[in-house]
Amino acid sequence: MAAARARGNRMDKRAAARYPYAMSSPELATLLLPFASGALRLPETGRALFLRAEPAAELAALGGRLLCVQGFRPTFAALEAAGFAAAPEASGEGYDLALVLLSKHKAAALGDLADALGRLAPGGLLVAAGRGDTGAQAILKKLRAACGEAAELSKNHCRVAWLRSAETLPPELAAWTADAAPRAVAATGAVAAPGAFGWDKIDAGSRLLAESLDARIKGRVADFGAGWGYLGREILARCPNVRSLDLIEADHAALEAAKRNVAPREGVALDFLWRDAAADRLGPYAWIVSNPPFHAGKGGDPEIGRAFIRAARRALAPRGRLLMVANRHLPYEATLTQAFRAVRVLAEASGFKVIEAET
Ligand SMILES: C[S@@+](CC[C@H](N)C(=O)[O-])C[C@H]1O[C@@H](n2cnc3c(N)ncnc32)[C@H](O)[C@@H]1O
Image 1 (cartoon, rainbow, N blue to C red):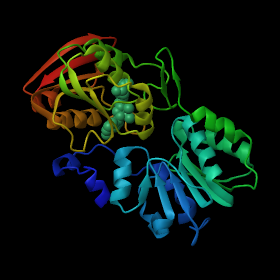
Image 2 (image 1 turned 90 degrees about the horizontal axis):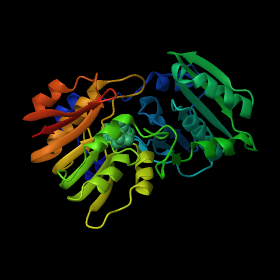
Image 3 (image 1 turned 135 degrees about the vertical axis):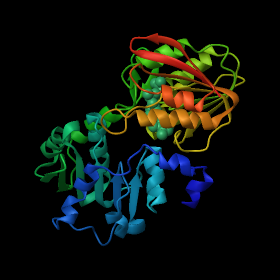
Image 4 (image 1 turned 45 degrees about the horizontal axis):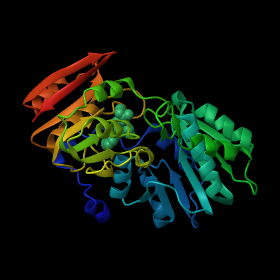
């Protein structure tokens, strides 16, 4: 917790009151179901690993024996605040228990299962759960096909499966690991991990926003929600007067890809910050460029985009400007006009709008 504070991970009270990210999910409740029902017991000794971890009071009994792996910064911060040992990437092996919350992206979920199985000691317990509507059944079916019988339960429209790891790892795991690794994004020369935003093609909204980037964007600049670095690359290519560029991204894997994809330009101080753009203290910037997220879990949620707009306002210097793109149907106008002195639409095309707002 103290470490989190030292990294500037404080959220002010007003921001916390309107915070858009839910910190526990129905799949978490389902993951813990076999323990709650008495079918399984938490190990009294040995170490445990939790991939895509969310805070769960039920796991506090594992204390320092549990490593929570979470690459999404807001959830990582919530884990640390709840007292769990957390890291953005998995490490170590010989674990006795591995818990996995399944990504809704199949390749990422199978990659996590391969990672968890590879880190378990022989005979160690794997417990994995995911939502039915994001394909958990198909993923767990693949797990069963590779590893043999698994016990299963369904609840909350979610499914949980568990099994003991064998002495010899199934051959399928190598392919699952390879499929989850960063790969080329078509026609860009960039790489991104499957499941990250825009991992298979450049987003049409981001492309439209890039067309509005020019010499007016100058001084200290940030990209809020930088992804694998598409807009960062465009800012460096199109904006000669930029002096520094902070790429701010909550998804650790996407930021690691951005480090590979965005080459520094002479005279520009380039930084890659694993931060929660909606909550962490950032800035002051002369310009913020953003294609804000509009998903938390499944389905759209404009409150996340609104939180980005309010956060951008807080992080901008006097007379600073936000340049953002959004789906035309997303209702951001009221938030923009409340937070900013002047708001105008710069471009509209293919269902997107590019908006410029001045403090
Ligand atoms: C619509 S995508 C845009 C990505 C990239 N800028 C582009 O144009 O391709 C939004 C990005 O915001 C990131 N994101 C979501 N919540 C965030 C948060 N609280 N703080 C920072 N980044 C966040 C997502 O991981 C995603 O990469």
